[in-house]
Image (cartoon, rainbow, N blue to C red; front, side, top):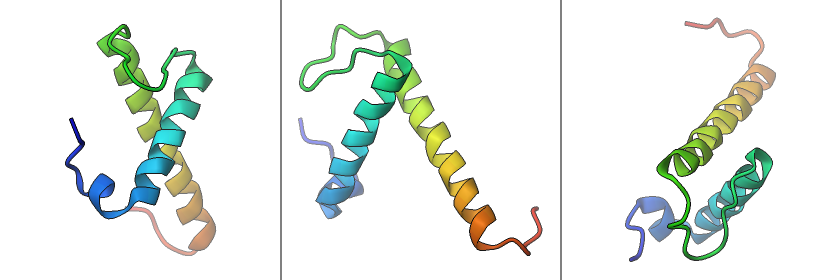
Length: 75
C-alpha cells in the first residue's frame, strides 16, 4: 500500500532522506529495522523509532534557530 502523505507524493528526495534517517535512528537505538516487512517488531519498537526521529529533528531545528538568530527572544 502506497503512503498517501504529501511528502511522498511531492518530493521523492524527501521520502528517500526520511527513510535513510529512519534506518539510521533505528540502528542507533538498537531496533532491528530492515527493508521490507517489519511485522515482527513490536509497536513499542516502531514507536520508539518514530519518537526518537522527532526528538532529533526538533534538536536540529533548535540548533539551527539558535545559530541563525542569536538576538531573538524566546516566547
